[in-house]
Figure 1 (tube, rainbow, N blue to C red):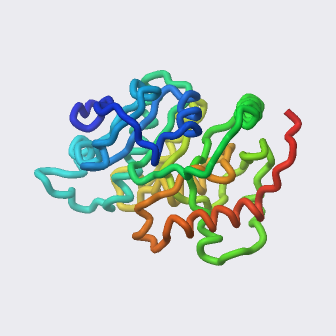
Figure 2: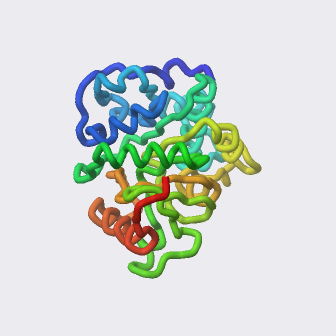
Length: 268
């Protein structure tokens, strides 16, 4: 896609500890491209030297023009609004990584923040790297919202959410269907690029109101072979539209971890 005003390299160097700390930077070493999906001032943020050259900024207001979602300054008639536009950004970021022959890409939304209390040791990383080699993974979920715990409070784990132990801080969902919403921070492997793009381009998608939302239908219902980090790393700060605070998100993630994940020493 040719969109020079909407898809461009990072321009501001600097620290941004709410997003990039020692843990998230270490994960960034394992990807070839980092896509920052944003609008307006959310695009004008600094990126540390360690990742600066990997970052591609997707300016939503400009990408919408290139997609003809906005024509002459007005939303195109019949569009489904933010859900469709955000989903298209995730699809286009994946396509860009695919065109660049990336082995893996990280996709981040502007409202994601890193939980500063998360720590991974050298042994944690060694175990995780071994798990990445052992499993044909498609996605690493750094941030998510376990919506059933949000709705219903503490309860037994649903069968589709029982998460196979991978390391003491990560588990593996071989099947799809666990209702983990949110798409603010995740990694996609190149073995999944083609299928992921196809999901977005399915019937009723992209140019229709019924397009599957990336955070409510695609990642949580159609993506298999996913690593889920526990405790989770990233949370959304702009979830207020859904009526949930940062602390509530963390508490719900804790319920998922308690009920669906029982870390032991993995075999690899």
